[in-house]
Amino acid sequence: MSSTLLRTVPALRGALRAGAVVKPAAALASTSFVRGKATLPDLSYDYGALEPHISGKIMELHHKKHHQTYVSGLNSALEAIAEAESKGDFTKAASVAPLLNFHGGGHLNHSLFWENLAPASRDGGGEPDGALKKAITEDFGSFESFTKQMNTALAGIQGSGWAWLVKDKTSGTLGLVTRANQDPVAGSLAPLLGIDAWEHAYYLQYENRKAEYFQAIWNVINWKTVASRFEKA
Amino acid sequence: MELHHSKHHTAYVNNLNNALLSHATAMNAGDIAAQIALQPLIKFNGGGHINHALFWENLVPSDSPDAKTEAAPSLTDEIAKTWGSFDSFKKAYSAALLSIQGSGWGWLVKDQAGRLRIVTTKDQDPVVGGEVPIIGVDMWEHAYYLQYLNGKAAYVENIFHVINWKTAEKRFLGTHDDLFASLRAML
Ligand SMILES: [Fe+2]
Ligand SMILES: [Fe+2]
Image 1 (cartoon, rainbow over the protein chains, first blue to last red):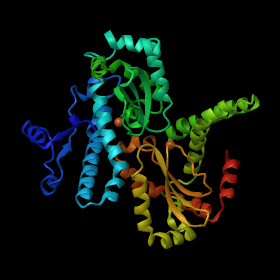
Image 2 (cartoon, chains in turn cyan, purple):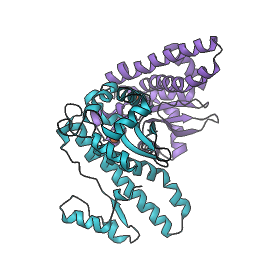
Image 3 (cartoon, rainbow over the protein chains, first blue to last red):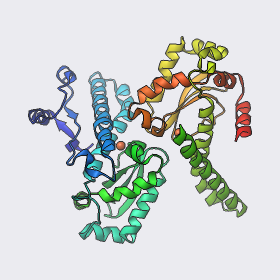
Image 4 (tube, rainbow over the protein chains, first blue to last red):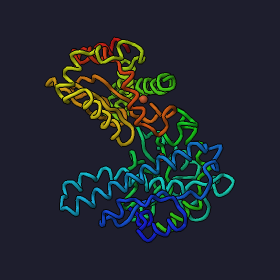
C-alpha cells in the first residue's frame, strides 16, 4: 500500500481544518492502535467534466459511493487487523487479508484511475509524447497498436477487473496486464495507466455495450499523469 | 430483465457456440494446445449460459403462488433443519451474496450427501462438482445496477420476493442428472 494513500493522523487533522468531509470516527479515539486512516481523495475535475465520454452520474456514483465503500472497507480491515494483532490473534489477523486486498486494492486502483483521467478540454485524450511515446512505440509497435491491444485485454476480462499499462521496474519494458476484481498491480510492476472494467464504471451509460466505453475512454486519458508515472517508475 | 436476457445471456450463448465450434475444429486437427487454450472461454461462456438458464427458471413474479415458500414444503423443512429457521437461512444466504468480491453468483445447493449448503462462485463459474443447484442469484452488477445502482443490499432483499419456490422444490427433490436433463431439453 502506497504510503501517500494512507494519511497519518496529523494529515487527517489537516484535512479537517481544510474543511474536508472526514468523519472524526469514534473508533479513532477509542482504539489507540489505529495509526492512520484512508480517506476519499478529491477529484481535480467536476463529475460532469468527462462528458460525453463518461457521464456525470457515473462519475459521481463511482467516486462518492463505490470508492467510498473501498475506503471504509479498507479502514475496517485495518482496524480489525490491528485489533487482532494487539491481542496476539494472528490467525484472526490473517483471515482479514482477503478484505484488506480487496478494499485496499479498490482504494489504490480508483485513486490511480481518477488521476489518469482528465477532461477532453484540458489534459485528456490525444497521444503521449516524448520518452513515453518512444517506449510505447518500441514495446507495442505503435500507439494505435497499443490502444488496440489494451482494448482487447479489457474485452477479455471475465467478470470484474482492471487492465493496466505497466512498466517492469527490473527491465524498464512496458507491458499490459489485467487484474481480477480489485487485485492491485504490485511487485516488480509499476502501474502507469489503469482502466476500470467493472460494470459500475460504464453500465448506466453504455449498458452491455462495453466496447463503446473502452473506445470512448481514450478521449479522457491524462497522458501527463501517465508520463510522470513512467518517469518515476 | 430485458437487457439481461436478450443481450447478456445471448452473448454467452453466441460466444459458447463459437468457442465450441473452434474447439471441434481444433479437435479434428489434433491441435491439443488450441483445445486447451479454448477451455477458459468454454468455461466462462458455458457457465454464463447454464447459470442464467437456471436463474430465469428460479425466478417468478411476486404475485404468483410459486413465489411463496409454501410451494416448497420439503425444501423449507430441510432449510429449517439445517439453519435453525428460514430467517437464519435468509440471513446467511444474503451475507454470502453480499460478500462476493467482484462478479459472481450465490447458490443454495444440495451436495452429494443430500445436505444443503450455501456456496458462491466467481464470474461465471458454474456449479458442476456434482451438487444440485437449487437457487441461484446473479450478483454481477449488470443484474441490478440500472435499478439499484450501488445499493446491492436492496437488490438482495428484494430478490427473495421473486424466488420460484416451486422450481426450487423440484430441484431439491430431483437429482443432478434430472436437472441437467431438463436443462438440455430446454436449450
Ligand atoms: Fe470502479
Ligand atoms: Fe447475469
